[in-house]
Length: 363
Image (tube, rainbow, N blue to C red; front, side, top):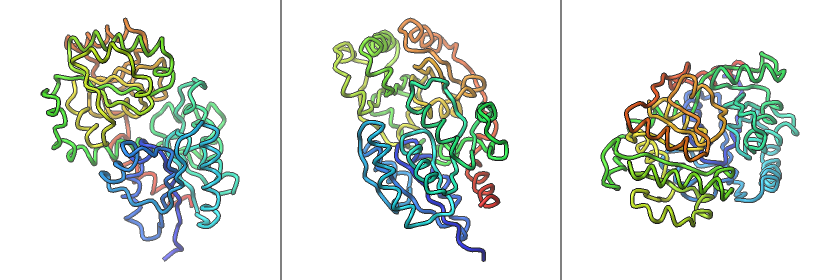
């Protein structure tokens, strides 16, 4: 047998946890591969971290850097500071980072400085809005990585336009969808919506967490005003992100009988809510992808998206954060004129297999 291939995987936030589930399942098929899981502790809230490890059967991290919350600069620096001795100790053949959070960039930077090979899963996505911290993380991570695993055609085009060698780019599909398809049947049994005395398609789901939406009082108030109008027509279930809770002192929401404010839920519960909803309103990136595969209409409360295939092919509509547009598009769906979509190429549950097959040839 060839020597063991030691692969160090860095995760730190909710989307990362979901994406590594199929990756670690695939690793199990190869005795040659020795995976090492690093949890940076970027998301330290139980609802955003530990519950995902528990319900998704993610292996216990080999290392927990326990970084916690802080400014972007502080958090990125602290992760690098605590990750460096781990990399030096383990001397992996490869470091894998996923997505676009601070842990992604910190992991890639630390590995690059130590001259380690780096693979970026979910590479090439661009919103072309560098006011978004995630966009900076994506750009920098891609340009210091050795292997770029891309989810959709726009990712390939973006990287080539930026001068990245085609030899580094691998169009493998969306690993988030691997997890969704694997866990979809399990989540169907939960019937979370029954807690709110509603039946399937009798409610809509909302998530909101981006600083441009919740930190700007004028914009946040306009979104809340749109929710006030929409809840007159359909009940809204809103798992409230910790960031949003701090801003949510607006009396208009407290007056709404049809808006259910709940704590963040686990992945399986959220998946169940999305499977049975009439539509979703969100500023999340991953939800745009999940709703496209589930065939559920999605109104994205942003001015742009780094996942254009969900608009071009899927069920996603970019509505921005203006009250009139949000209400208009919601009413279209309620009137039975929702957008129909298709599932993008390679979003078939086999992305992790394609990634690992490529890696075994590359390292």
